[in-house]
Image (tube, rainbow, N blue to C red; front, side):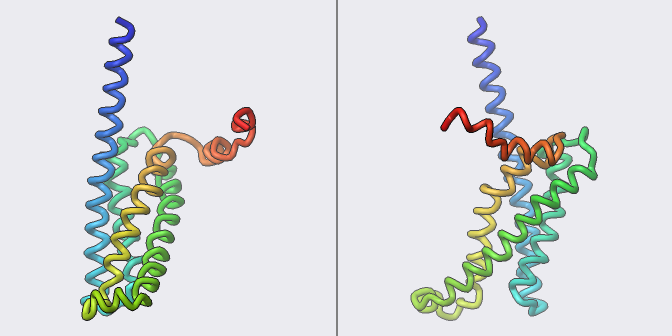
Length: 175
């Protein structure tokens, strides 16, 4: 009987975890859509340099993502909005830097490749869109989701989180 309760508990835990991940990805995709629309409109309609447009799109998309995540994905109603906002700004700042400079570096690297110029020909000025997609996916899975799930929408203090992350004594026994 105890095993059956544990199995149900495990299944329930995994269902909740997977559902939270799916909701986070839906929220991220919606925010990314807003980000991409803003970025592409700024570049194509207003002739803004793609680096500045990427930054602006990331800012707008991040604001959308934080709002949706707070109320729907992580249901952080019990956590003060100021605390969530400060922690989100920390994670978001890293995300914007990774997206912006990653897009820049990847775009510059790809446009310097002769085979990319030959392959894409006329469309080489739009390589930044491919770079932005690649960076958005990498940053979303590796940085954003993980830190939002573990840090931003939980009721813990930043100082305690850093102590937990960098607690060297915890790993001493494993060495």
